[in-house]
Picture 1 (cartoon, helix red, strand yellow):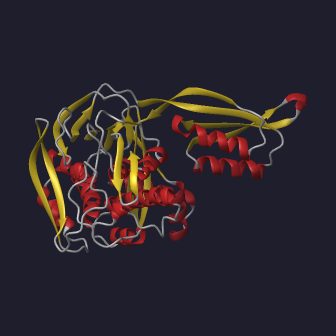
Picture 2 (cartoon, rainbow, N blue to C red; picture 1 turned 30 degrees about the horizontal axis):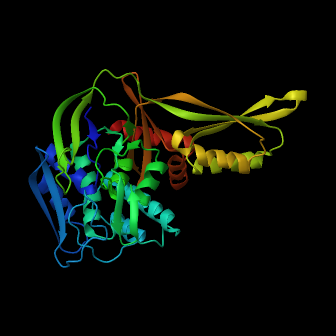
Picture 3 (tube, rainbow, N blue to C red; picture 1 turned 120 degrees about the vertical axis):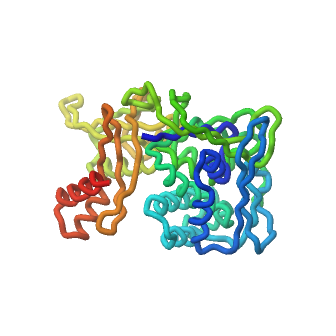
Length: 410
C-alpha cells in the first residue's frame, strides 16, 4: 500500500503541492493534457527546476495568456504569478467540476475544496457561500491547481495521505481589503473548522494560502504532530516563489510505506464536557446535539441516569478538539439548562482512516475505511445508502450489500 507524507516546511499553496507531485515523478505531460480538457480560457503552465536555500525543487507557474492583471494579494510569498480574470462564484466552480471529464474521485474532491473555500470566505465577509465571490478561486490558476493536484494523486494511486503540523508564517499581508493578519482570515477559518494543527514557523511572511490549506484539508486523511516512521521510495520538493535565506521555501512529499505503526495512528488530546439535566425535553436535547456538531464537536451523546431524589435524568457527554472549547462552552451555557459542567482533557485514540468514492448505479457513494489489525474495513455513508435504496427501490440492507459487492470487485 503506497502512502504519502507531506511536510509543510515553509507553508503550502496550490502551486507548491502540484509542483511537489511533479517533482515526485507524476507525469507532467499527462496532467497538462488532462487539464487542457477543462473549458477554461487560454492558459499556459511553466514547470522549471529552481533552488531554494540550497535545495533543488520544482516550481510551477500558471499564466492566463489574454490578460495582464495582477493578483489581489501580491504579498502571498508562496503564491505563483497570477493573472486574475473575471470574478467567479461558487456555482461557477461547481459547474466546472460537474462538467469536467474526470473521474468522480477527482470531481468530488475538487467540489469539496471549492465549497470549503467559499464557506470560509463567506463567513469572513458575512455573506452566504452562494453569493460571495472570492479572489482565491477567481483566477484560472486556482482551478488548474485544484484539479491538477487530485489528478496527480489519482495517478499515484496513493491509499493514505498524512500531513505534518502546518506552517502558516506570521506578521501581516496587504490585500485588496487592506492590511490583514497572517494567517489570513479565510485560512484561519479553515484551520479552525477542520481542527488542523498548525504553527507559525520562523519566517515573517504569509506562507499558507487559503487554497493551500483547503487542498490539504481535503487531500489528507490525517494530520500528525510528530514525523511518522517511514520507508521512502521517492521524495519530491515543490518550491514557493521566494528564496529565503535560512529556511528552504519548499513543501516536501515522501512516497512510501509507514513502518512500526500500531493500529491506532494518532493519539490526541480532546476536551470532554459532562453534565446531567432532568429539565430538558427530548426535542431540546436533539436540537442541542445538532448545534454542537455544527460547531465542531467530535462527539455528543446522551446516557439515561437516575439523579438525586430518584429522578430520571439525562447525562450529556460532549467531546471537542481543544481549539473548539470556547464555542462549545458558549453553546452549553446558552442552549442547555445546566448550571455547570465537568471539564477534563482526555486522550483520544483514532484508527487509521481514509475516504473514497465509488460509483454505484450512477450515484457517487462515499466510503469510510478503517485499518484494523492489518485489514482495511469499509463502510458506506448512511445517507448515500439510503439514497441508493430509494433510487433502486431496494431495502436498506440490499442497497448496502450492493455497495459492498462493488467495493470488493474493485
